[in-house]
Amino acid sequence: MDKGARNDLSAAVPKFCLALEEYRRTPEGRVRTSQDLLATFFPYDDKSCTDKVFKFLPNEVRGPIIAAWGIRGMKAALRDSDDRVQQVVYDAVVAGDVDHQAFEDGLGAETLVRWVPLSDLWSFWRQGKLSKQAIHKAIATAYELYLFDARWFLETITAKGGSLKGTDVLADGLTKDDLTQWVRRIHETGDGTPKGIVAALGWEKIVTKTANDVLIAVLDAVVTKVGLVSATAKDSSPRVSDVTAPKAEPKPEPPPATAVIAPKPEKAGAQEKTAPTAPRTLERPNDEPTWSVPPPVHDTGSALSTEDGIQVVLDEEEEAPEKIPSPTSPNIEVPAHTTATAPAPADEDDTQVRPSLRRSERPPARPPGNPRSR
Image 1 (cartoon, rainbow, N blue to C red):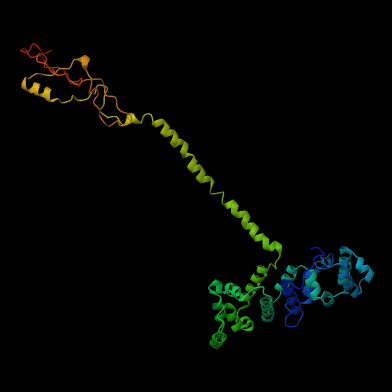
Image 2 (cartoon, rainbow, N blue to C red; image 1 turned 135 degrees about the horizontal axis):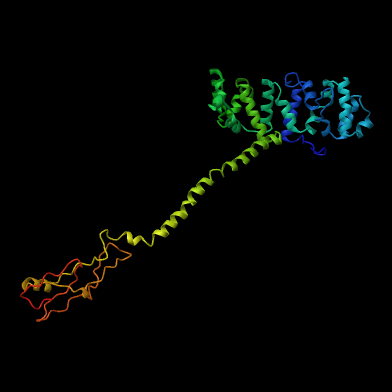
């Protein structure tokens, strides 16, 4: 923190910290002692020390404090550097010239809140042995400074692992008389809003009848809500989740990509290879190169063959060509040369009908009494 930047004591959060520090210095609010203050903000041993307070104070503020301890002249204290001030205070503490009580008295509550990081002051107070009085002071002060409202309080407070929430938590520790007075008070005021419910019970009753760990959890939520926590502590959790979340997402992506993309070229290739030969697989299993279309039936030919006993003979030269299967509809039989091979009208001298016959058929033997047949 820059020495020129100080906390505005008129703001809500610095006011909250100032109230806690002033109350800590009273007998009823003594959650941390003066020894704790010295050990926290100026820890030291026989060989070294760490300054966590004087380096934040400008010379015109820390100079009079050091001079009042009698360990440095006013003029020297006003111009001493940070390292020089640290060494002078360390020598005085080790020698016993400045004890923990003088240290706390010299560094007043307003001086600490104005110049020291507020997160450090909150951490110092939070690590103490928090009593009912201290918790009551903290919650009531935060509520009065509008750091949270009654609705947020009822939505946040939980107990017994989250099984109790809101008014159930407040009612869990109350006796029958307490509950009766609480309901009567709400009825008298006619205010059933969260603010009216909290006001009807009162903060003193809430803190007295509620477990300390439940109330401290609410305080932790309040300081997180208003940003009164260390920046590193507040930012560390989101950064960890932001870093791990993207790493977890890409892992499942590669397997589906390879599983979907790899088969596509194979299927496409297979379809391209089998497409030209598809019509062949649709041919009849008994088809042979010698298969031909059965002869068409003509009324005239059937009458002649029935009445005259004329047998039909097909010469090898007039045999119908082989059937060419259609690539689009291979199962449909289309007689070949139905127009070209249509029989000519029969005349009186030639009554032969020449339909298409299978090659496997052979002309029967010529009857001895019919010279006109071939």
